[in-house]
Image (cartoon, rainbow, N blue to C red; front, side, top):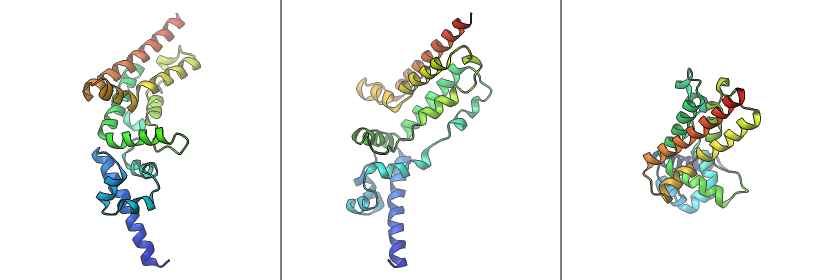
Length: 200
């Protein structure tokens, strides 16, 4: 293959990826037809470079991700896990709302191809670890109780919970965020309280 052909293929691939990335950053619905239209290529061409939407999303979302530790850096002096979990939950949900179209597409790809490589980055797990990192208030909890709290929070701190409240329950996005932050805080406060009782 000559160099000109290689360069053209690289430019076409980059155009498709750039178009998908812009759709992700804009929070718009991300579909192959929309990506192809934005990249000014045919849908068939887009599929030649990316066999499915999931493989395209894996690369397109990379520039929108955040580091959990950096996200909670403003709370560096805050040891209360309830406060930290509340902040982590709100940060995640606002990130979801900002990139809602891509998040919905990633969830759909995960559901339709559960055995395939997932495009979802699992940001909630890193945020939960960072939120519960200061150990002082969790000292009374055993390893099993801490692990259970993390699993409980993973259910609540999620795009699925957010969309369940907005899509199925009909809550406005802001009320849904407040509800989920409240639930995550209650879970954490209860776990910490049980640990405190166990130390008495």
